[in-house]
Length: 259
Image (cartoon, rainbow, N blue to C red; front, side, top):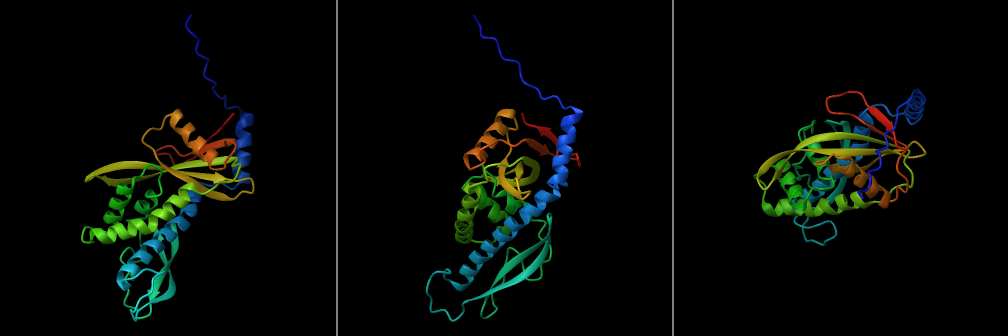
């Protein structure tokens, strides 16, 4: 005898549930996707700093931890403010004693990085291979850079990417907010359009934190369950009470309660 399929549980959105969601959004001060953009600024600034560190290694001819007879050496940092797709971002630019270092990822008089910021953030997405990350770095710097330099920059930022992807999380996030970053990536010489889904968690103290970024090629319910389970394995012991997102082409956010 064939087994009968269990009916799919569908959450009915009542006025009471809507009221609870609105109260939570107000309590945790969730505005729009701007909250995600603010949370990504530190990630963006830190990555650019590491890329510049790799550039300075190449300029001086030795790494930070190595000894050298070079009479030029590292000389602290200079803070710089630039505009990005996520708003104003502060970057710590490494300096050398002779002031001969010319950063390339963000040049000295460059004030806007909106042409590269989403490419940089995309490298943190789960599903990006090392080759795709290297090709993204090459795309950021341009084809005139050497293969060895691209390899050095990749080696510099890969540990930072892996540490960020696998860092432990809080036990409970009552609300998750999901938004998509659309970007192009070169894969074996072919340009592909992808969406990286950024998941912002709100913990019980109201702190907002980008928990993970996933390349979304399969947006089924099974896919999202695997994403939630991956967060659970990193420390989020319970699934969120509410899941919020912004559909394509829609400026407003929509939320649902998870039973």
